[in-house]
Image (cartoon, rainbow, N blue to C red; front, top):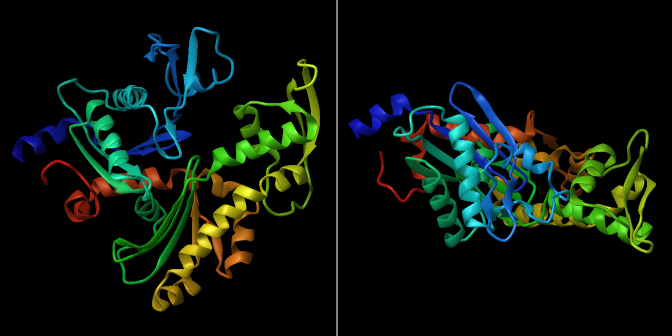
Length: 350
């Protein structure tokens, strides 16, 4: 224990939001120190990470859909969980080394946020990846708890707080009270499904094939869930499915709103199912406290309005919605002694 405390003086302990689309790292006293796409460039057929400095993160994301035959740009997480163990380990190792710029023999403690609905096998994969990537000690905390902590909700008090975390691969819906989860639902629908809905719309309506990066840009630029004060339009470029030639067309925000109805409907249904499972006293608390929305998907214009209309509860988007989970992991790191019972670790207590 004394040796561990000494190591802590020289290490940069960190909280990690290991997301399907982006990985964020938060360090105590410094805030968010890393926010990069969860993408790795590898040699095709070998899964060997490229040897240059542009193999992970932002530079690798720019390669998506544009790599030559010898290189693949891979997103090693799917639906919030690890789909490729070796690539995830390499990506985590890169991020940890980038943040922990100290001597190799000093390894950091790491708190990793994970979806509440993942299996024991998936938890073990996250734990092993972080440990083999260079962590001295690994703690796992559920994303809703980290998000609630990062959003400043009174999750340790005997009152209900509802969090809706719309991420890239999953949507986490939970009601928190007394530093634990009272009711939760983990839906494997998120920003990626919205991108896929846009891709399908372009294919069906315009016979135009576009890639995921283009669909994501369309979603960010003109996507919405409720009617906009001023509807927008955007040029989209891709490959014509009939002629096979490059082509462009104009699309409107009304079209994208229609395309997003299915994934948005699934998210709202998930929230309603969660509310139906609540004890009456917890439900009564939510009449006053409402719903707090976090995650990149929560920034989609009008989602809070639609959520309010569907549930009858005031839904509001948290400030810095994309960083709430990462900031929450750092708070857990600050309070390991008090909060370690709410986390999971295969190692003995500190």
